[in-house]
Length: 592
Image (cartoon, rainbow, N blue to C red; front, side):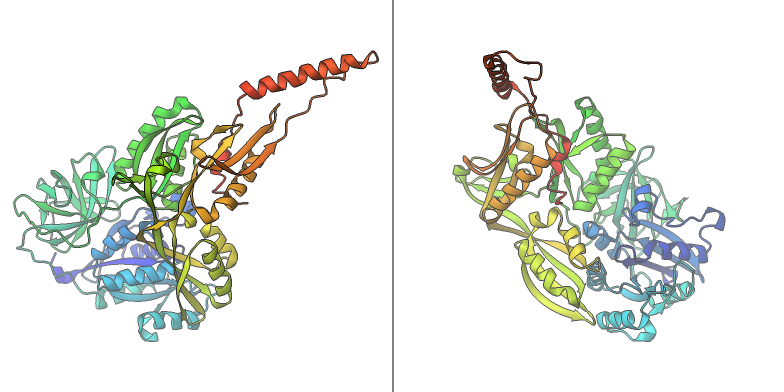
């Protein structure tokens, strides 16, 4: 198709502002999907996406409207997937910014707007959910005008649920979004904005053709990874796959390849073909590294091979997932997996449990630390238990993040207090009408466990949060170990700042006391830094009255039985094993 009739656009919004519902209405209006096949959140194919009301995997769809080919990319709305969102924006010329008329601008809205402005996209502001009783159109319109510097007449007011005003969105896309400016005769370059592994067909790439064309049967090459393969089939999605003979300049579509894993074709990579080979990569590619790690162990050790196979299968589709085998004296064999963030971890855990019927124990999530040894060697450790001997360490560096929180103004005090409690530093405070935007920096490890929950409770659910990694900083960090009945449990070890070690040690030991069941002998629970104990709790033993069967007679009979019991308890304390339940390994996730 002639490029002047192509419009590539995406929908960006905060979680739950109606992005997928708007995509449904657009497909209905352009008759891309028949009424019979229509269901809500059509582009969200996973059960998880429907239940949580979030988009996890982005999906493109091609529509026809007024002699134009409209290519829509429905992007994920969560901070964990911000790199994927940035690549989707790079594949478009326009962005429809959806803002909930009852909630107003949120942190992820801001983050996505900045990405869209940086990618030089035409932004079409849309106020959604105007049919709700709680909708405050004048206030939210003022917020959007403040943010984008546009006029009120530029903001489209719609209800994606009822379909009111959605046709105006299509007209605005055709009129305002510029058509692609690619060169048809240039060497072929296509941007991968998503890829996944299909059990029957291999790796499937979602691409945007920037220059040149890709035909069925072409030999393709990825410029960043150097992987080569064949384009077994090319075509567009509407939203089902429709094969075609070629993908032309400016178009968005899919390529079925003979590659075996998405690690060969990562998001952001550039695809070229042998017959029109390009050497220059498209800008913006980066190798995304996980920075949240957790140990996954099967409840029964017999399921270890099933867990390993399941994680390997998942990693074929998710190139950001990194894993390595791990062994724990208490939990047995398992895998340590790296994630992009806590939502990513949650999704992977749920998928492993649902799709592969696994019963899992997940240890407390931690981040990675950079360690410089006295020998000059640099180590990257992913769990506290693998920290080398302290006497051989020069410094330990931990990751810090730059964060932004958007809240109504009356909650500013509580939020600043929360940031300080997390060892964070507030950097800036600005206002968007009745809302405040608080910028801060903080160590990532302190935001991992329950920061989001605390933010929601401090702000009565109105606060929203967005962050990005800001490099590593040297801090006074120590490893806190936990002992149960005199035995160290390495899966419970934590890396913390020295100033927080005492209180955290006491808190975790107190929680373990609630979680670990009482035994027939006294059990000590201790927290220690190196050889120095900093906290202790005792689990008292069950008392069994062994003298109930005795009646009358000399007191020495009673003493004899009690002495025998004391001897037995002593022996049990020496040889007895404490059964640690799986909840003990997730005490940091549940603060209350």
